[in-house]
Amino acid sequence: MDMSVGMKLFLSLVLGAVIGLERESYEDKINKTPRSGVGSLGVRTFSLITTLGAIAGLLYFSHFSIYILIITIFGLILTAYYIIGSFFTHDNGITTELAIFLSFLFGLFISLEIFPTQLIIAMVIVLVSIMSIKEKLHTLVEGIKDNELGAFISYAIIALVVLPFLPDRTFSFADIPNLSTLLTSVRIDINDLINLPLFNPFNIWKVVVIVTGVDILGYFLEKTVGRKRGWMFASLAGGFISSTSTTQSLALKSKNSKDINKLTAGAVFASFSSFLQHSLLIITVNGVFFTKSLLYIFSILVSSLLIGFYFLSKEDKNNESSPLETEENLNDTKIFSLGPL
Image (cartoon, rainbow, N blue to C red; front, side):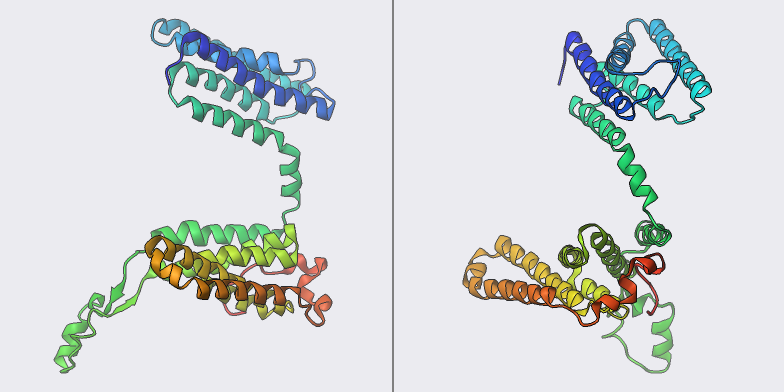
């Protein structure tokens, strides 16, 4: 949307004040000044920074030399602030400096209308949110175990490195070089089989991504919301993608776990999600058929939920002695495995 010069300056001032409020609140919380001798940064400072960025943007077209002068002076001041601050505090972190730089850019973006105003406001909110959860992020990082980090890296390779580069096409006998000629020479007629689909590398590996993804999702939900509810939520989510792959993942996990009833409940919940997904699809495609089949669909959904909750509430024998569920062995637990268990 088109804004007047006054509105651009006012919006820049407000967004800077929001960023500065978070910085000032953080310094009050830790009850110390991160830049001793340099001065703390708060609402007033960040408001001036974003406003300065907006003024620089307004001068870009009409007074380019002044625009360059403002950019240069701001860069020198920011560099000096970091050097002097690091000298006094011996802290080489650049979070505040990056916040200053981004605040200046936000003002610049608003005045030059490089991005939509809604996007800039969203970026400011994201920035404030990231800075406000510093302590929670530190706690989260400190709590990450070696096996969890290894599983995350492995899954990133599986899902983001390998999968996108696999060909998403179905191969048949016709794709095997010289096979047709060879079989014809020995009088074997395969005309009916030559185009028979054999495999799709992308779809096959996608099953691997889903199976391992359910394992990882279940593991972290188990840690955050509890063992019983964790696998229930993971199975419900996995069922919407592939109930077969989710059930396969749970079956593999059952080899090294005594929570058989919980995993059985997860398999039932995965089937429930899959059937619910197909039911919603039937509604959009053929409402008349859905109406006629409503009794059967309802009975299947209700019965699967009841069966799932039955196994979920059923206690496994010797569950407390399961070696994989103790905190002492948590570091040695494999979150997922691509090979036989």
